[in-house]
Amino acid sequence: MLPLRKPIAWLAALISVAATAPPSNADTRDDLVTSEVSYSSGTITLHGTVIAPPGASDRRPGVVVVAGAGASDRNDYRPEAEAFARAGVVALIYDKRPGYSRATSTFDDLAADANAGVDLLRTRPEVAPDQVGLWGHSQGGWVVPLAASTSEHAAFIVAVGASSVDAGRTQLWSNATKLAHAGVRESLIGPLGSNASRMLIDAGLFGDSGHDPVPVLRRVRQPVLGLFAEHDTSSVPGESLTGFRKALDEGGNTHYTLRVVRNADHSMRRSDDGYSAAEEFAPGYVELTTTWITALAAGPPTASADAAPVQDRESAPVRPVAWYESPVAHLVVLLVLLGAFAAHPIGGLARRLRGRTSGPGRRPAAALALCGIVAVLGTPVYLFSIVGSGASDVDSAVLGRPPVWLALQLAAIGVVVATAVVWWRMRTGWRFVPLAAAGVLFVPWAAYWGLFTV
Image (tube, rainbow, N blue to C red):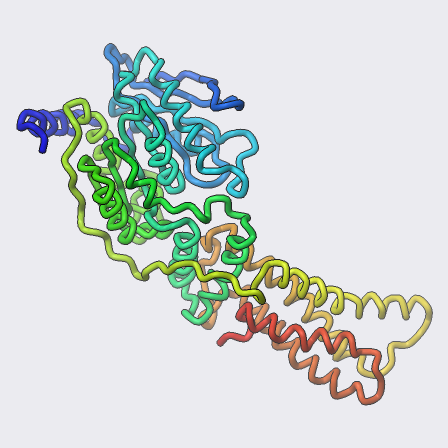
């Protein structure tokens, strides 16, 4: 337990800073001091901006702002950095490392970059070198505990919108949550929100999918501020707060503060539901962050945590991919189907150029080829667009399914009907056997992807 004088000093610092902290959405463009910087992380050079309070006459706490997933540059988090600077905390924002991608950049790489930022801030004349920490949002909330666990100099971490379950599980939960909100019926959430993501995870195309944050959190010894949005739809907020507390307790960390930010979405903007957000930060978010950081000068906080926020659905472990779900198997089937369906119009065009007639059965065969091409091309394109947007682009449903998916399902039904007609008419010839066989192969492929799911 801390000596009595430390809690008193801690409380006094909180009250003092809270009384003077500016509102989170104040105008920030005229009186902040900005400096462009370049610094090394291993063999690469990073570029960033240091944003400091105006007219600072003494050394201030510093924080390295670690971005979430995606090819973001430093300006994506400039509003946070400017808000922190206005409250007296010097902030470093920086561009992602050259060649960054979620598939190839490891968490160790990103943690090394964050720690290089800590080392840079410690050399700045306006920064107190023993009060430099790490702030990470979303994926950055996984990076900063890893960085802190290997750093000799990081004084604290702030994890915002971070998850305590692995990345793959988090992504599938987010997809399902957003699809359900758009009105997609439960029977389609798995095919639309899970199958393609599971294939990409199995193929290793998400470099962070296997990251387990719990063992890392157990190793963190610095004070931790964990902030969880009440209406987070990207990271499991309730499970994550509980998981953070459990992991930190198991690791023996007694200096954490875990808080729920009310009326906030994943990015900590003001929101009543997590889907529509205002430009300004959620009430109290910036003040909570900066008062906690500044008060660390009086000593570390004692462990405390809010009650976990309510989730509409629980997350589930990522189900392993079966042999028939492997990316290679589906790629082979897709190429076979596309080749067979496309061969029909190409062959018909060649016959016309030679002056030959198509013969009986050409209309059902043409319908089969057209519907097959639409369904076989459209299905993966649409599903991977859901993966790419994290299901954020699905914002409406007709009959419990996105309008694009309804169109693809109608094309799939067209394939089945046309296949039956072509098979029946093949009594007069065998020219359409490859096309009809493709129609038969299409059925289990389409069933797996939910094209026949009611």
